[in-house]
Image (cartoon, each protein chain N blue to C red):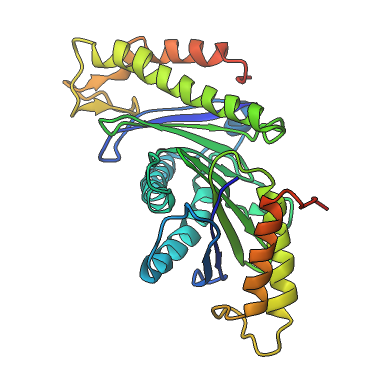
Length: 172
Length: 151
């Protein structure tokens, strides 16, 4: 089970944080920043539309939250907070999933729990509570050092995120 | 074991069948079904594009174009079977329903037996074949009563 990429989007679709892991992704031909940014916009648009779709198909009485989207190439796990922040995690497809219903449920909820933990313990603690945090003005890519913008690199977030993901049994 | 809906999308994104399969299926009007069908068709392709890792030639192991195979949400599982000809069979069910893949394959077999072999059926047009819909109902009944064995 490998993690390929990790993104955080705000309510309007702007990327707040993005990171690519795993050698499979790094070995792909180098893509420039524009292409990656376009790809992220695609991901956000897809998450947005999928939520509407799932909402109209879900029976009444159930909460229409999107948990995961699986394709032949990999699985996208998502978690959305009440404030509209979306966390997206790309992994490959676990061959063990689909064996028994019980295993299926625990592995899915463990992803949801992990993403929830990343939000509530890591993002809120490291980024939102940082005294330099400015919600409207986050500088993402680390290219160009605009003065006055809040840079995620000034917090511990990335290091703590890497440590947390590495501690998960499904990260390699 | 709660099946909700079945819908079939042709290769251009138009809806050719939609059918509620159980009691707890939410009632959805025809216009909204058409919208759901075409939205799903585009999102199916976008999901393969947006992935950081792509399969060679963008084809999955069955030779069909890669795309959404499964969506899990709170209270819903959606499974999609994309055939090489571009027809998508999509089934939704409550979480905990087993054998969704086998049911989808069986529906594909029923489609080729009832709809495709019907000399009056026009390809890519909405399916108006009682034989097909009766066969689907019988299949769902058989699965829910536990009498279905995967091939």
